[in-house]
Length: 115
Image (tube, rainbow, N blue to C red):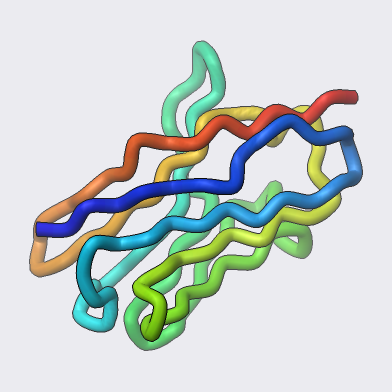
């Protein structure tokens, strides 16, 4: 079992940056896929970015070139660097891990981008 704890959310102005962190309760080396999802009010949760244990990355089209996902196995931590933030990025951001077919979610961290 894996517990995930996000941090780094907050209120920023459009064009500014934030870095989200997701610390896992155990080693993430064996975790097949880790990712960031977001959910805005009244909308479905969507995948923002994911990274596999081999380093393969995938991004939502609307964040390509602005967001960067990375993982630090030594720190058991997943990151999401978000640059050039837009009001449309406002949402609760969730960390997700998939290990041996089991899915784990964090509690989420709020990101609000003011225009």
